[in-house]
Amino acid sequence: MRPEEQWDQLEALSGRFARLADLVIHKLFRALDRHEFEGTGSLLDAANRAVKRGLVGTVDELRELKDIRNEIVHEYAVEDLPALYAEIYRTTPELIGLVERIRRYLRETHGIGSEG
Image (cartoon, rainbow, N blue to C red):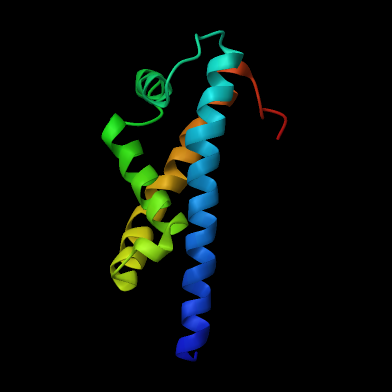
């Protein structure tokens, strides 16, 4: 594979990572709060409730995903792209695991997604 193709694949991975992190952190957690009639609040409040639900171990884990997402979105501020891509590669399994825990929580707690 040519280096240009490798960079294209890394760019695609980073875009997907950023979109998924944004969806989970900014949309899914807040939607879950609304579904469970939790009060709305700051992003930190939503993150703390995600910890309480057992979806994530600590708020710092979410903060790391959000920080990486912000670096991707504001790529012009990144001086070391190879290091950023290494962070994305390292934390992608964590993000996917978070999505799986959310899916399991929704199925077990609310019966959402239990059809198949």
